Length: 303
Image (cartoon, rainbow, N blue to C red):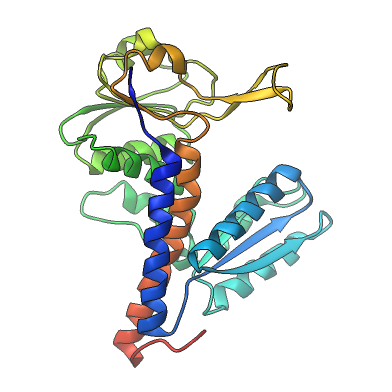
């Protein structure tokens, strides 16, 4: 049976390290990181995610800046809030919770976020630098970054290994492939137009599954002993559950765990790492800001 890569435990370890770093920053610069979250409307799932992020901020000592706008908020009202946070020196990261109501142009709102506060890592310049050798983005997208940290902290060697990423989304698949390249893996991307995906996946030492299709990758697709990072979070009907459904990944876990050497579960694998990486990005933004101010004017004194 495969070794389970425990995302909950690794995320807790990362949050503990962030908490220590925040204490150190406060002692050195008299400043703590600040994360602004903008949410528009009353979607229950979005409000749950935002509540969890704010709770985690409090746990590690990051200051939360809340902006809860009604469903009727206009495009200009949302943009004004983002621009205000851009100017706020206590805010080091801005997160816009998606999806937003249909009348809001999400692309325009995201484009309004300052690159120095783009903790989601989706600014075109950040993505562009991610894809270039010898360049590093200010921020790396949280979920792909979490995948790499899970591999690193589980002792998976990426250098020189064959890695296959299943899925080519801008949010996970593409940046995950670029991050694996930066780790010196040999990377192949499998997508909806790829013929014979099973044959390609079967060659992989590392598989990152991010197709958004429940149970797509079977145990028979996997190379014995490979490492599997399952990013998929799919709802499947299950009358035995109180909610009437259960969450499952893109990998058929029971079969795969008999073939793989290491594997993440769903839930409890990649999910907890995404928020941990968001907090880490916010911390890194604050550290960068303090170092820049320290070089220019001495230690930061803004609280």
